[in-house]
Length: 381
Image 1 (cartoon, rainbow, N blue to C red):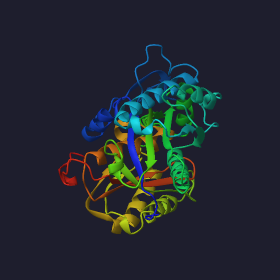
Image 2 (cartoon, rainbow, N blue to C red; image 1 turned 30 degrees about the vertical axis):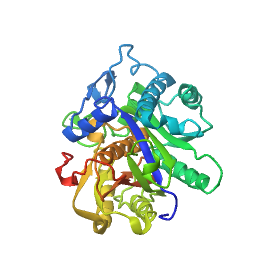
Image 3 (cartoon, rainbow, N blue to C red; image 1 turned 180 degrees about the horizontal axis):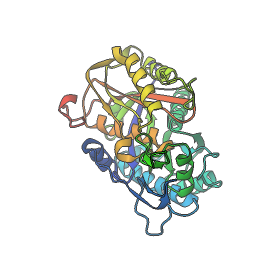
Image 4 (cartoon, rainbow, N blue to C red; image 1 turned 120 degrees about the horizontal axis):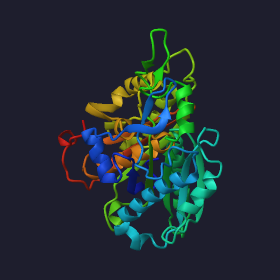
């Protein structure tokens, strides 16, 4: 709540093909630059190559059976970027316990290696990051918001214990759904944007659906009374984070009216208490599915009184492809990066829907140390 010790997002990292670094991811989002390509081997049910958002791979790793190497490579890249972003803080962070929330896809999803958690734990262990605790959170698109909620609650609890060194929490998510097995699973559900399906009049490309992508992102969070206690300005303040369950299944006949997503958003905003800022920026994970479009539309309608005039919407999936389990943390990282460039009193709400019933939302605010430009002059439209 608003009377608790504030939670600060010290820094973040993000990588996907059209944005392999945090700054490039932000530039790709502002310019709507998308580096999507034809899959080297997978063809849809009509024999046409499908589009994916994947890194160039000289070993053709996305063609064969999936293994944990690609997930580990993406996650290490995100962690290395986070390490660099935290360089101004290292002296004050050296004695802090380091807790890791590792966000991975659901184990039942096709294309997910059976040994993924063990392999990722090993890939994330290094001298600069001797983890005191490691929590693995598995799920769909909203799993990153669930991990952030757990990290927030753990940091708040730790802040109530006097005499203890306050920990540094890292939420790291990675996903790669560009192998043939994952694409076949999506294709069977008519979820591949542009994939061809047979019709009496001939093959027809799907106008809706997602372009599968791969990427990773990481967030570093700590508690502190004031931002002045840090060696460098934090990127943003986390005012609230909440998750809810959506009662309407995406396979059902009724449209999704966003009950779960709206509930998560309202709970996240309520956690800010009386200090809740007006929302000027809204991040969503829309990716071309009518189900999510309905859900977002109804949610935005309910949030109308809390949105300032001229509010702006960001849809990172247009440039990153659908990052599935990594999308929530990636969107939070991009939102925090943009807030780090501002000194605005307006808030940013990040919404996360999913293939499963879980929904999530997080409310961020500027740490008050940006370039003091108003929101309107930023080229974010």
